[in-house]
Length: 370
Image 1 (tube, helix red, strand yellow):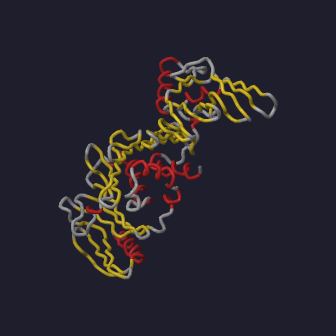
Image 2 (cartoon, rainbow, N blue to C red):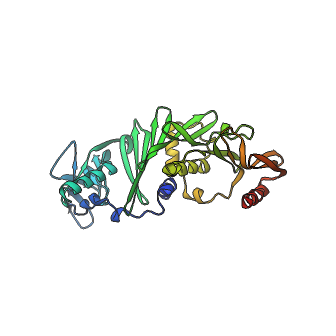
Image 3 (cartoon, one colour):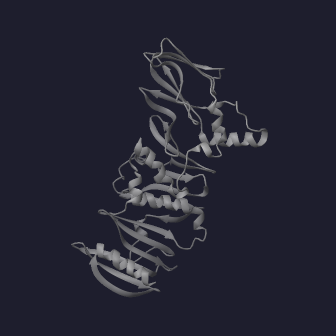
């Protein structure tokens, strides 16, 4: 669970600093579940026999209450609510096997409750309606959606025929909420967040690696396209950074003529995290469902804060004609040595040779003189 919890912080660092548990959020609708009607019958103090719960309604099977029966103190038949959290789900068992999972869309529920509060006043006794049905076989999800509690929010995963097709990460803080979504669309993965309805991050395959792009209104604002990062023909009107991460070379190109970039700051920071904390070349053979599983299981917050193995090979800006205006560019020759070129006001001001480690100091000195 630790890795899944750190995933949330990594993916949503651009959207807030440190979120807190939703108890103090606008999610007043979640509080309605604090008064649940649950009755547990026991044959002894240790052994559970039956649980009756009337705190929710299953949309396709409405009842006044729902029962679950235990066998050997384990769920056996019927409906079993997963804890009494503000956000919860219900599992259905047949002969000891989980066959169905009932849940609801957290954001839809939150918005609906806020509408009710505005229009009719807050209702303490309203019940949560579970309208998402998921099916299981051999304790594995086949179709539908499952929700997991993670630090500062919830992770929901949607499956079709046993394949992961979408991820939602819902984040709650005081007076704040957001949703980050990964969704497979055709042969691409589209990532968006609720607070930025204009831009999106698109993950696709390009030759031997993954291509990450930030798009808004059909225009590419940023990407890791190495074709745009060459010293001889860099992309016009751009800020270009090239990194060596262990033995891999990655670049990040940002449009330098978009005055509204602050509107897309969250998605750009997310794109930057994808470039710096993943190895696009090593993921090229995975299908999109496997890529989604990769992002859930392997992204770690430590990678977001520790870039000791990341060295800059170039940091340049270009004009409308693709001419390098300012910055420095280092290219490797042999035996870890390379040639660097410094630019200022469109002119080459110096060249030299050194290793990449020392180039970090040379680059820092260059920017200190600007």
